[in-house]
Length: 259
Image (cartoon, rainbow, N blue to C red):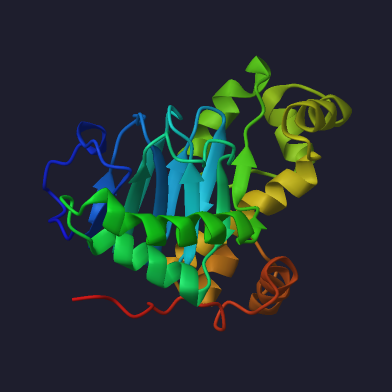
């Protein structure tokens, strides 16, 4: 059902198997919270930043994130258009799905749209067929890595506070001087806590930040400069390496919307 951005909505107060909402959210910060239901978030245009306890997730346009019931999270939006959120009863056969970001193909998109706009009073029997299609599509959807796990070692806490506020992580030798630990120790901590060496972790941070800035309308030159690439062409090559396309050809455009 279509709602206004400032409408009060509590998905856990509904009894049906699936309840959905559609909205143009603008700027919004959900605060840290959790649901008794599983949740699927989707945005056709604009990025959604999702903060978990020790992980940052970026939801690019035309992607969906599956958030299992009970997961504490915070969703931050800046000018998100065609926001869709679906909430699923834990009685449905979806509890095995992990938290993940998936690609949304045209059929999956139409299913999400239909669920987001149907009446909250729709009889369960009328929902059943579409729910079956949704279950098939979410299980078949290709998972993508738009996440960044933070290291947990306390020696990095002060530095991570700045990173969470948007500061660009420095090169390894600079970080070593900043936190007072040798490069080998820092590398070992990142591999232990995140499964990535520091260089790969920093590259993933830059990719997520680039996606966020581009979705907000920043020019390629501005992104390249702020993320400390030596040139626009170096940034474009980096972006193509990680996404398979250039920043200008990435699907930022909005998909068809329902009235």
